[in-house]
Length: 83
Image (cartoon, rainbow, N blue to C red; front, side, top):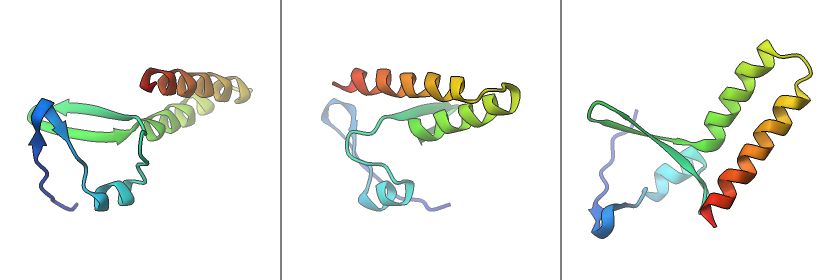
């Protein structure tokens, strides 16, 4: 685990340092999930969350293409929310 500091600016903006974006492979415009656990803020790329859901569902469901189609639809909807 690496610790870094970042400043919250006007309007509550938080800029992720370039080193963090590179190590987490977060591209400009990518959607991230913010999880609050007590006083801890965790930032997780949405794609990682969707991949985890897909993996869990594929173990339970047969015909994984249905799950793939569902997740692709969710990705498109998430991308539209950014526009």
